[in-house]
Image 1 (cartoon, rainbow, N blue to C red):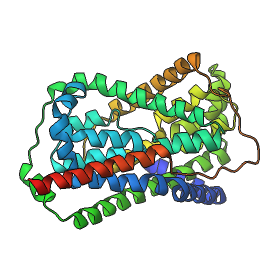
Image 2 (spheres, one colour):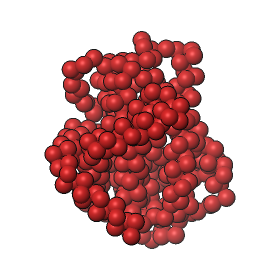
Image 3 (cartoon, one colour):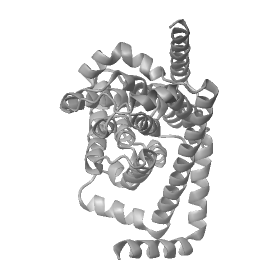
Image 4 (cartoon, rainbow, N blue to C red):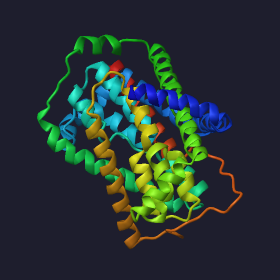
Length: 361
């Protein structure tokens, strides 16, 4: 009955604020076209191809002992973990799903990886947030470093806890059969996987953009802000709480234009927002992960990355640690960075080298 009530109220709100909902959906689709697809689709294709082609197995043979010692995971997961820190939020979930379907990791190890393979990529933080929103690429670098260090710390700590879950794979025959597929077939399947994932992400972003539009038009945003101010919450937290909770891109835009400290922006990116969380759950499919533990570690990651930004600020401060974007400036998002390009080149070289080794053998 509660769910039915929520659905009916949502339908009524969509009718009452039809114009706002339409504008919200349009905004979500524009975001997907300008940022989501250009920045995530290539990495999703690359990560899928990396796993399906067997290149992760080549890497795993040489890094298995180190990976198990540090992260408590088989060596085949190292490439997937690295791409999750470079490609952006949903790439890690897609990698985990592929590794699980391939039989490389267990359910427990999939849950372990999803505690930290949720990181915003350098394309979004350094170029999008740092250069275009804050007009300060150094601030973008600090944000990315805070996310990277926080994720690695969580990976090492949880790796020691999950070490007892030793898993060598149960479907080796299936793995070998898939690795014999032609490279062209693997590439086509990888593109199809990425396209399906992008479609899910676009739908969720549009839906959450519509929800935010309804909250703003109906006064819910102002009510939340007033309630938090009554609880003695500071201005930037009360002003941006709804956006931090729901959609990270909107939160970054609002925080950047509001003269807020850099640590709050790091907190928003570290948490990710419910829209990103639902994207991850959709990509994971039927893999049963503990939702409460997932949300807890999202909060831990947000707090830890904020602390790291404050520590960095003690020793090195970009042009402005408190910032505001001038009015009337429209940011044109760019998804290409030197870091992302270098990562794609490194992964491509690894794949080519693995093919040469196979021919020699």
